[in-house]
Image (cartoon, rainbow, N blue to C red):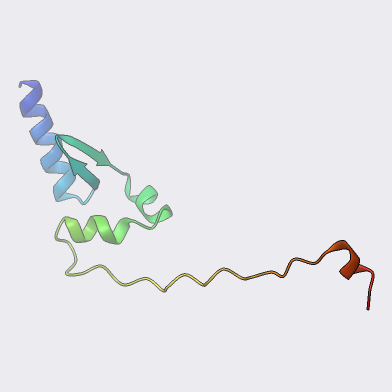
Length: 78
């Protein structure tokens, strides 16, 4: 087996099993399923591999809490 054939075989297996997080220009990022879950990309990988119809929308992230900055003089008044 040539290196090219080996690459094609690895890429095929990774694609079939939803292990690819991204790929471009002959470079694949293959990610273990536990790591996919840990980093919140499992649904994306499953979707790209055709294992699910659409990724489940995530809850929107909460807006950052604005904390008022107090000056030192504010701490001693009131």
